Image (tube, rainbow, N blue to C red; front, side, top):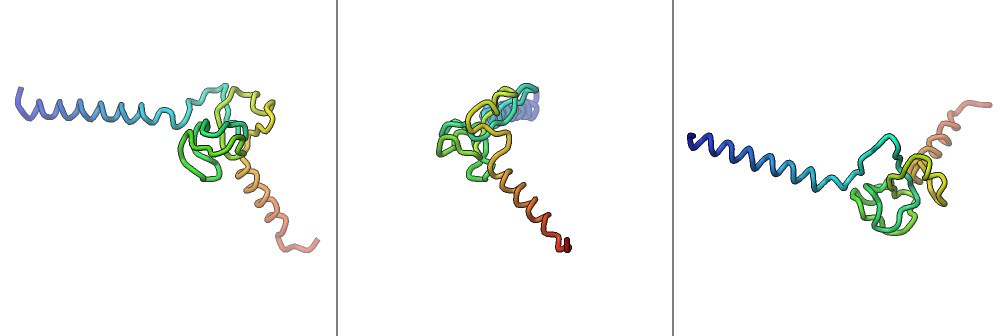
Length: 112
């Protein structure tokens, strides 16, 4: 085998190992989504959230600062979230955005 072929094979092997390593390291970032799972906000213990905060406080798992933050989430089996005290399928940030949008739509400038 030529030296350039060996180098190419070695480089390809190293690259494949590096890609597999990065994928493995990032696997915890976003839990696998199954048909039977949903995001549940407001029930996570500090440092036990699954991924980024809806309120853009951080962008990684395990960084929730307080218990039951309404913008932190974890994946739970469908139907369980709304049975838990504080559990919501919508984050507080989303609720606030939707309420603001609704109120701005009410003020169109037309006389009633």
